[in-house]
Length: 127
Image (cartoon, rainbow, N blue to C red; front, top):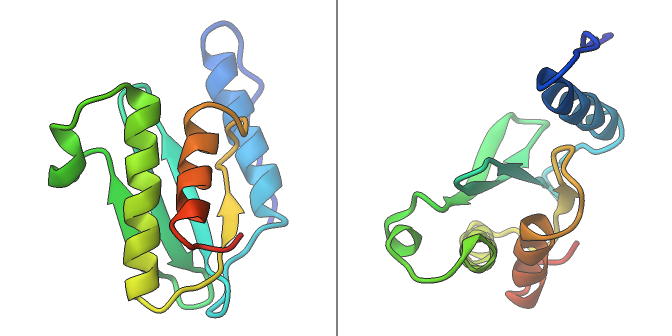
């Protein structure tokens, strides 16, 4: 199946480039029952993480900055990303997941993405 993203100009170029990178990553990264995929979705305001079994099409665990325990918390966006990483790791462990494949969603592995991944590793999730 071929996916195409139109070449954009101006402000839309950044979003199109992100989509191209995400498609390129998803060609190689897939989650199984033994090692589901940890997907990170980043926006300007928040961050979301999901543990997905691609073979069954089920979400096993998820966490977001919109969760009640994180939403009113103190700290900057990187601190909240760390909290999301810890929370998704705890929920994944409760669902019986020990190891995951990391899908950064076309984002650069730095800043909030790296903070979430490091926090999930510290909480006991293996990448």
